[in-house]
Amino acid sequence: TLSAAIVPVLVGAAAAGLSGVDSFPLSLDMLAISLLLQIATNMANEYFDFRRGVDHAGLTGIAGVIVSGELQEKTVLRYALSTFALAFILGCVLGYFRGLILVSLGLLSIVIALLYSAGPKPIAATPYGEFTVFLLMGVLETLVSEVAAGGRLSVAGLAASFSVGLLVAAILTANNLRDRESDQERGRRTLAIVLGET
Image (cartoon, rainbow, N blue to C red):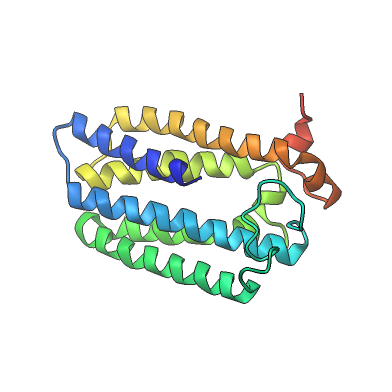
């Protein structure tokens, strides 16, 4: 998933470069924000999945530091929240140079990242996970990366953002296909479950 956090930033910077405008320092800031948000989301996902009993010993593909006993669940939550906070601070730097709207979009991204795994009906347990990552990690992250690098949006950036979104959604679909049986046993209704394996 870290590669899925890097690609939107690179594509957004490339779209800005087509216009002949590029800010390498702000692109690096955006890259750090993107990676921190993904890392924090992964930690929050592990914490909430463990609390719900979704993650357990013997399950394929989980990070598993809580299940394996390497870290306490409260420690993972604390790390997740601290990482979100660091991403927000770097987002404020970006907002200073490119506009406060980016800070608002960053806060929205953090809230949705938490709702992905938390709350009474986590997005991850519904058929809307792919659509959510398509919008956030594909379209939004690519366009914000373009603004970070070049200060404006372009048709090329918008077109490319849809391609990035589809790739990120495909990663989640593969993950949900792998976990289809165990997810179904735990009452989750991912797109892979709703549509069926074929």
